[in-house]
Length: 126
Image (cartoon, rainbow, N blue to C red; front, side, top):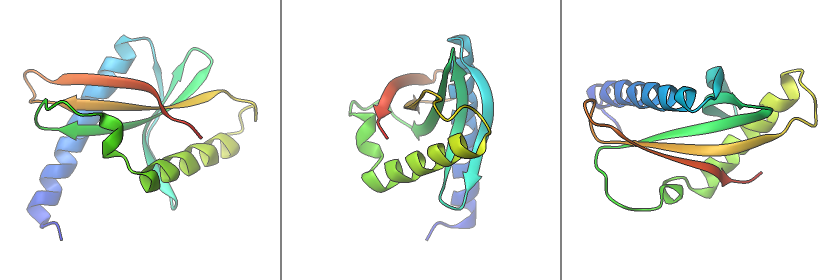
């Protein structure tokens, strides 16, 4: 079980990582639609627009720059929850049912002064 102090540090770090990811993606031309979209089935950290594409983004943080495939940090269960949540958003948002979308992952590493960012487009497919 996570202690309250550990949980607080984790939520602060998670928000910081999301802020870094959001700024990076906005610099790349994406526009924020929604942040921390939640339904009982799951949560999506960032929902953004990339031209005509809706992008569902999972943000992960690692305190070091060790080399590994970021997709390994998101298991099938987590992918399924993100996909379900994204498809629910698509159906409930009142947008065109043929809306094009993708699922991305952004990994933020390091510290506040020198964060590293790895952005994987189409990290997994619905």
